[in-house]
Image (cartoon, rainbow, N blue to C red; front, top):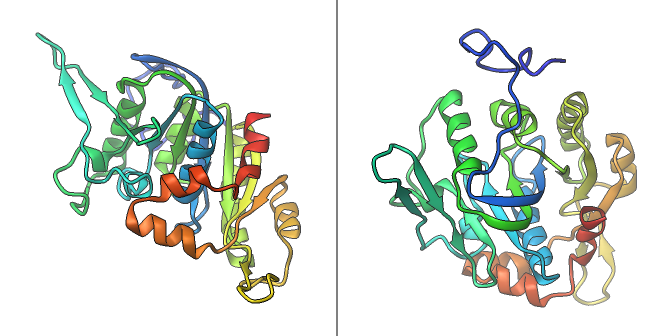
Length: 277
């Protein structure tokens, strides 16, 4: 499959050559990791946040690009939704530079919700505009030197997923799923798409795999009797880790203190294994 064949702008594009990777203008990024799923509500933004915080705790320089342009959530997850990014315009030019917001632990974040007046203000844009904004957020943000840039992608196999896979130099991609056959079937579509686009697949994180009983400590699988290993084998990917339903994490997400909770917790450390490797 050529990049042009799958492009939403194929019939209107004036370029005579296939799209090529775009470059960051204001920094040096060593590794770019995409986090994606086939459908919404499975926790890919939460996984993005956990991964970013755990990498930062290891001493890496980390950035997060909120690629879910019409449904951004990273500012809330990282507790910076009350802050705003600076947009700097060069003198005598229409070019702009985005200055990301830094979290308490120094993670650099760029999101459309950091650029609009209110976080609940809707963004009503068609696909080509969304793609252009995504590209600009990657290329024109003052990232500085980063060891890892994590991109929280919208669900599905649409325009934004294509833009990231075709234009941004991905080091690898993580798939997020939950333990239901229906979800796995939809997630499989993204896996197949990424394989056709020759994207390096790091593995799958199964979220909401189980809940731990407060009294006996047993793990209870509440959505499916199938193991995470069985689901990952269906997807044809290695299993990175299983994540529980964690009400403490939910409380901290709602209170804007999730970054500190994840940073201080020993949970979720195994999510780093395949990424750093």
